[in-house]
Image (cartoon, rainbow, N blue to C red; front, side, top):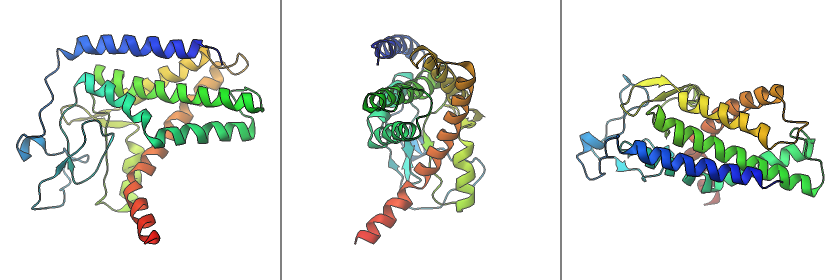
Length: 247
């Protein structure tokens, strides 16, 4: 694969860091986890629905956690922290697993982008998948979330019926909370994915760098985002089942 995609990602990261660092001075500092429970309690993803009562205080979530449990509290992220979060999440095992699975499936069916079906083609597909996934995360959860002042984190709904949780997870692709806790269209993901998908035309093979394929890829990215939310919504349940079976 050409060095151009890697240079493109490096330039994008440097520009984003400079722009967000400058903008960050205009944002309020993130409150500290040591504040009172009322100040740090997690906002309910569905406003108007009561949360389960508990005498225990919620546990502060890790600063760069992308997926927040029902028993965890959060504080507002600064623009700098959103950019850090977008990079940190791509270093997690699930991110590498997604890239390997996507590249492997495309290699198996020899789909677009058309890199070929030999071992070199798999390497190029894996590199393209990694570049696309990282650019989506940085643009959506880092840059766009800072510009539109939206919270890029996903708040699990573990105490609700399964049907509601499935609907909620899929809906998060289109609806998100602002930094102030209000619901808004998910401009961050919708626009971030659009820009990241359009950038594929600069590093995909010429035969695959078409507008029709780009539009199709954008739709797939939104569907993949909804599926990813479904998986992460039920990850704690899956983990408990596996541990129970192991024991």
